[in-house]
Image 1 (tube, rainbow, N blue to C red):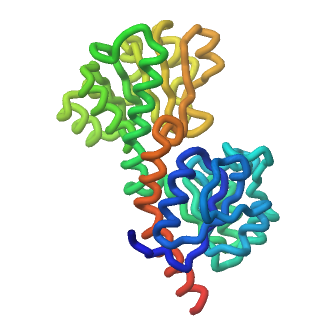
Image 2: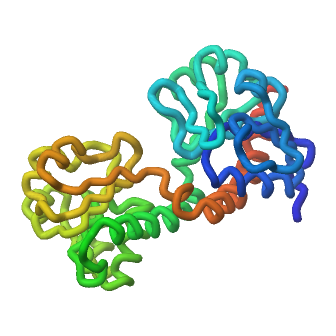
Length: 303
C-alpha cells in the first residue's frame, strides 16, 4: 500500500458510514487521522478523537468535511455523535491559513466566508472524478427506492429522468438495462441528441409539462424547483417521485402530498445504500487531491 500521505495529519469531521471505510484507507496511506464526531462509532484503531471541531482545526494539515456539507445553519451531519458540530464564524476564524477545507457541497454563505477569510475551499461535488463514480451507488439506490415504493416493476415502466448530468446519465442507462421505457429530459440539444442515440425518448425540458402525464416513476436530479404545483398537477396520482437533488430538492413535496403523490427526497444515497463502496471511492480520489492542494497552498504561503 502506498504511503503517499505519510506525515500528513487530517481531521475527518462528521459524516456517515462511508467515513468508517474512508478513514482506514487514508491511514493505510500513512495519514494520521483526527476524528470529530465519532464518539459513538465503532472503534477505529489509531484514530485520535478531538473533543470539538475548534480543537481539531489547529492541529491538522487539512480538514475533511462530509460530501453533503452542512445545513443552512452550518451544522455538520454526524451519524455517530450526540453533540452538534457547527462550522460557524468562530471555527472558520480559527483555521490557519495553511489548512485547506475540503467539503462535498459548500453553501453560498460558506463560499463567501471562506473567500473573505482567505481559506482555501475545495468543493468536491464539482469534480468529475468523484461525482461520476458516486453516480453508480446513487443510481442503484434511486432504483432501489423506486422498487420499494411502487406496485409495478421497473421493467416496462415509464421512467422519466429529469436532468442528464453525471448522475442522470448513469441512472438512465441502468434503467434502460433493466427494461424500463426511459424518457430523458434535458435542456441542451447535445444531451437530447445523446439521449436519442442511447435509445431514450428525448424530451426538451420546455416540453416536460406536455409529456409528464405518461410518467409512472420520476427521478429528479435537477437541484432547483422543477416539479412545482403546475407540473405536479399533470403527474399521475399513482406515480412515484424519487428526488436525488441536494436538499431541499427539486419538488414541491408539500403539494405532492396534498395531491396524494408519493414523493421521496433522497440525497446522499451513496452513504446510505453502499457506504463501503462510497468510502472507497473517496479513498481512491482523496489522496492525490489532498497532496495537490497542500503542495499548492504551501507554495503560496512560502512565497
